[in-house]
Image (cartoon, rainbow, N blue to C red):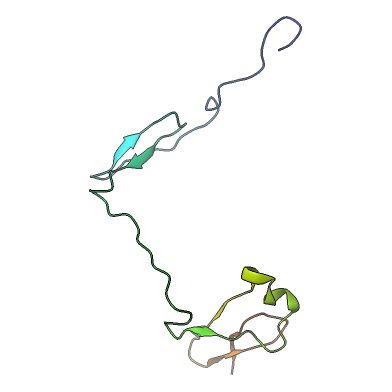
Amino acid sequence: QDSFGNTELTPACEKVQCGEYSCPAPFELKMDNTCCGYCWAPDHQVAADRHRVVQYNATGLAVEQCEDAPSTCKGPGVNAVSCFKPSCRAGDVPQCGGGSCCPKCMAG
């Protein structure tokens, strides 16, 4: 408050401009004290994501980091870069170089 008792605080959503959107069935628009609302449906109508972790390289698409990869690619811990087999266009082949962590498509 200033010396006259007036406050300069404005409501949180006063300057938020929400875009137009619609919620396809079975979703419905819920506001729940949010600025713009969100689409919601109960779990029995929309299945929750039951993503499961798979064994490392279960797809066979993971590849090793480049031999000369910078040390920053190696971690620490869970921050290590994961490399995957690139899908190269005709005439290109996966190659390491230029200080990259992972092989990239280059003219063969």
